[in-house]
Every structure is written in structure tokens, then in C-alpha cells.
Length: 302
Image 1 (cartoon, one colour):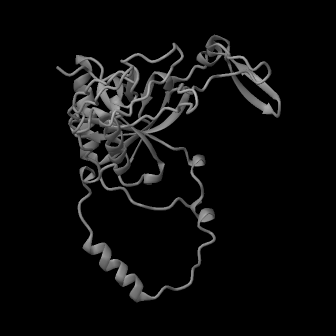
Image 2 (cartoon, one colour):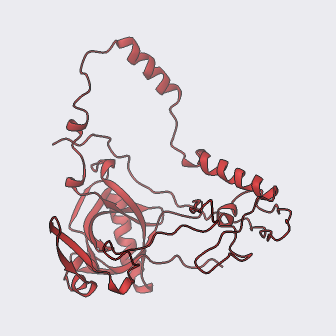
Image 3 (cartoon, rainbow, N blue to C red):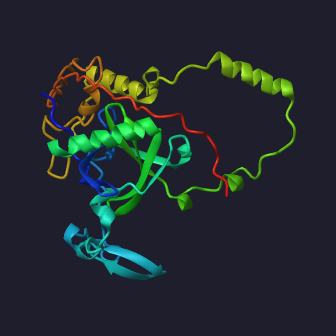
């Protein structure tokens, strides 16, 4: 039985006098990502990034680190965690839907990161479904603000399959002015036949968007490269902070190889080297397709 997805945020969604307990789950999967670690070629040891004092050169303990707001070069206002926690923002625990907009009225440029929204508890489900169906029927997005990771985010709430999806939005001052970026382009008249040729090419390749038809070619090629080196026995023990790696931690690529069709291949062991265990093939979880209206593509203008 699959385990319940880990909640990224818990709180309440509020619409006028109606309050519904909800929780957020990341909509992005990291299962297919390959993480490469830096290794010192000379000593075969892991390279790690540490928080070091600029004055003493010593590693600073996490408990001794506070946040600093620079008011002028070399002068800061220091803020510890307790002080930051004391900021009373209603959006830390409540998503209040303060506005509703047409589904196609938000420029895709503003969308940043998606999260699935789930009702938190049996009594929350009915109100959750009411808001979901109302948004779908009206073809509207709910707009509000929500504080996560110490930052107050502008967010859009929309129907997604059988549930709801929340997407964080960039604020207006986080978007560069398109007119300034494209100011150097020529406005001279183009030959009509060139545009007609481009239109013919576009028409010939027009189809419904299906993300499953695309794959990460670099990730696939990297897995195949690692798999070939595993078969050839090119396994190198790399020392970690706790000393030389054991047979269970020599290969950092193994997580990435779990999705490889050839993941069950075993490398021939070499003297004094541990052979990696075969990684089990995992089955990707079924993805829920979002039910949204097609947004208008327009450059931001001031």
C-alpha cells in the first residue's frame, strides 16, 4: 500500500466565513532526477560545502547562525529565528481567497511552482469539493497569499483532476519589462513569403500537447554511461566525512539507476572493491492531469 504523500504545508483555506483545513503536497517529483556529487580526483574524497566564518575560517555551528539584513555596506540588522517567528502574518496559517480571475487572464510568465491541495481531515472534504466544483464551473482561479519558507507568496488556486492545485506566482516587480529586454530588435518589415513558410511549418507540426512524448535525453544518456561503467567494474570507493565509504555507500548513482531498464545488471567485482547491489526497478506513480483553460500568451508590458 502506497504511503500518504508528505505534507509541505498545513493550515486553512478561507472563503468569506467558510474555513476549510487543507494541506499542500508538492506536485513535482524528484524520483527521476540524477544528483552528481563533487569528488577530489587526487584523494578520492567527497567535496562538501560548509558554512565558514570569513574572519576565523572556522566552520560555524547551525545554532550560532542568524539572519542579517544589510542596511549599508558592512552594516547589518541581525534577526534570529525567534524574532522572525514573532512576525504576525495571517498568511502563515491561512490561505484566504480574496479575488477570483478568469482562468486565461494570468500570463504564464507569472507561474512559478505547483502544489497539490488536499483536504485535511474527513470533515474538510465536502467544503473542499464545493470550492473545487464552483471554480471549475465558473472557469475561474482563486487568488490569495500564503507564507511558506519565510516568504509570503502570491498564489492561484485552480481545479486539477479530482482535486485542487495551488501555484505560486511571481510578484509584478519580479518580472522584467519585456519592452526593455526586446528594445534592440529591429522593427523593419519582413517578407510575407517568409512568414507564410513559417506558418506552413507550424501547421504541419501542430498537435495536442502530450508531455509523455518528451524525455530528458541527457538523463537517459547519463544513466546508460553509468550503467556501462558499472558493467565494466569501474567502481571507485570515495571517502566521506566518516571515513572510507562502505559497500552500502560507495555508489551515489544507485538511486538514479532504479528507473533504468538495465538496473538489474551487476558489475563484476574487483579485488578489494565492493560490487554494488542491483537496484530494483520502480514504477512511476500515475500523474493527474490538470483541468485548466488555455492561458493567453502575452509579454508583460508596463
